[in-house]
Length: 405
Image (cartoon, rainbow, N blue to C red; front, top):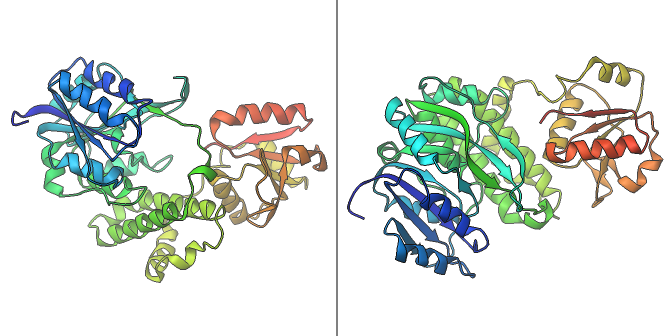
């Protein structure tokens, strides 16, 4: 590993035996061959490490490491970063995969532009390799500084913090001496955001070079108190970063969007657990500064593209119901409350609680209790919204609207 390569590919691995072969093959078969692959197993209990060692034994570019203790994806990435030796660096998760020319495209773009960071796009695939969505980054024809990129990327939604959606110059990474926070989830935020913001040359390439696998795990299967505590840590760290930043004015919009998102996540996740009051857990100092920052808050976007028909229907006094009890619903309810638009209740596919944000919850089977002239606003992920809309139309509802997430 003494010979410097063009790219270091860092792959953290934990119990990924079902997907790791596809991931590793997508790297091994890259059209650009001058790279090293640093695979760090986080004490998997399946065959993941054996698979990594198999690739290491037949391809000298692959290197398999195993942590002494299960320490989380952040620790695995940190371990690899201390051992990387190349001009560029990129992350890849063990259940995701690339296009065949991803590294070649990114290396050419980095060489030509001198960028310290390049953002690129991904599509979301299910376990059957069917595309179920995408995340497209903005397109830039020439490099901009990180503050400008952060602002541009925050025009429609908060900038992605996923580290595997960025291609990095290693000298820049090492000069910043930034690592992932160990032992928490959402560790990406305080790694990616500062590195992007402080870069002087950022490029963005909208082609989908990456494929992100979505597993069918519900929120109730993945939520626990440690995940909420992790979000609180990230929330507090992000505010402290903004307070100490030399770029407060340039980055406030994107930072506030992230704080809003984290706070809503904490609220919705807390609702699934007993005895969690997240506001009491947030330091009073940070609450003060967050409230002070809210004066910069951009207007919510969820209803601004609604047709005039929606507002005309609402003004007639029809009852309004929101379909969904996730983060998007919380954002929508906040917006409607600020606009003094009343909501009569919440409709969900599977009823887990009687009240949501103080509103009565109806299951699909209970929709017979709702007047067919009521307004239904669908606030779920785009991949489910069309099916829900068809179902509501079949049930005889006429005033159905889908918010833009």
